Image (cartoon, rainbow, N blue to C red; front, side):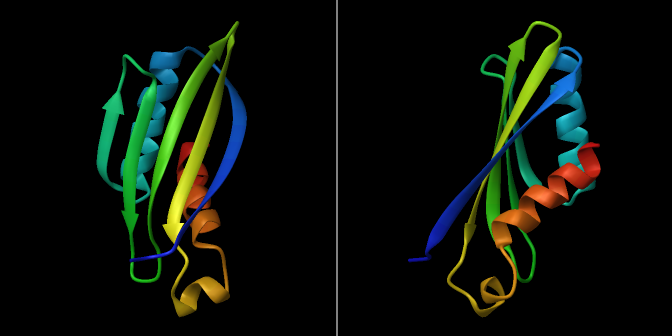
Length: 102
């Protein structure tokens, strides 16, 4: 069984929840994520990220506060391989999402 560790990041974005959720799905598709599932009633989006050196998933939750939407992204990745010694697979997953989201 693989050893998995999670990492969490939260940031705020101007806009409404539906617009932000749509942008998140587009960013995940552009970033090479697979099995993208959108749960609009719960304001959650999940996706898998499987590349040669990184295997993991991302779970994104949206929290609406006034005119600001808080985006909470949690990545969970396998860390029991040689490539995880050189750089964090969780950070790679989060960066891949954030690079295409902004």
